[in-house]
Length: 484
Ligand code: NAD
Image (tube, rainbow, N blue to C red; front, side):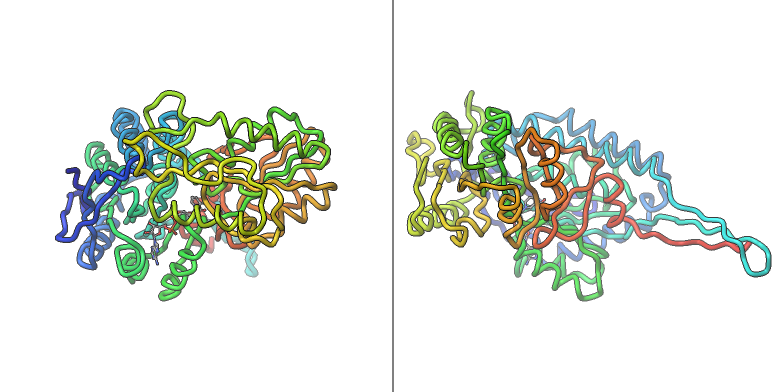
């Protein structure tokens, strides 16, 4: 049986307390995860603190950048190990994990190595009252020990999205991966060791949130800042913990994202785009579209076309050719998603596709499978339309005018992403200006340039990461003023 150990100060550490890691495709136990208690969390934070004072803290930027490049290269060299680990933990299709999760996991180190090497800081010359001059300039310092708390939906990608910039800026990290997906964070410890990242710079502790490693980490007084991706409710708990000591937080949280399809859109591209945004990764993408609004003249045609695509989706395990949809992450998440399937029926939805549990071959019968589902006919007040479900499903409603589309898109407490489909430039730009989200895609979805700002407004997050924006969180600016 695989053992997922904590990685503390360059060593793999077992604990007396383990919990099972199960494969979503068939609910088989695939490993035992060693849960960190306060002693292990203390040790990890102490190692991260010590590393700041050691070789890592003194390392020049060129060497740091070289090491981050080496991390990316080593992930790519061990691509298949990471791929297998991620697919076993999540059950996601091979095509997705091999094209998105693992390559992006490696790229995150290179991108931020490049950014940190090339980023300028400001400087000003200032006349002084005595007729002389002063020179003011900014120096960037790491914030220190960063707690990194991660979700399970894109485990390596989202973890390295935080660890890459944190290390590029000279911080050290203690990572708490999701209890559902311990594998790739653990494996990354081997990579760090192989390429020569000093001990204590990258630490991993395993466990849950409340009363476990997550809470111990966020409450730890020697953690200087917390970067978190996950549910909005969890963000609230972490923010309360971070208030003690007034520690900074960077939050990427939940969403209830709208997809807006105008009648002038390229119809086939819009259908394909909404299909991806609603069903990729079994709908377990924070940026996914669970509310689709289609302009009335093409509404019926659009619903029929999406239905056809959903019926053509093949469900199955990661390595089966042609599979487009894997299982949900856990039994608990499956019952949450199915509770919304029930709720949709109770609220009077028309079930256009799916709506239940698929019949899978016997070997997969215990996996966390649900049918990809489309509804129409729900009122905007239904919990199905208002709350994040995080499953392979969407509700489609008609709209008439652009004003109505904007109002519908913005009528939510969340503000993460919108995808808009239109050929009209003025419509596209007006949507881009007026939707209250961190990310607005026009005629696309999930297109990311890692140099650009990423994050959510309203209840979808605090702060932006990506490119130089990550430096806002991972560094502290010091102003140095020299009287000349
Ligand atoms: P989650 O909030 O349940 O858990 C995320 C992490 O937080 C896990 O590691 C968990 O153990 C830990 N945690 C839970 N309670 C904690 C506490 N009190 N203190 C410290 N740590 C705690 O989220 P999830 O179910 O793993 O992921 C799905 C959610 O993540 C969805 O809401 C999704 O929208 C969101 N998400 C957002 C983004 C984004 O970029 N905005 C990206 C991916 C996922």
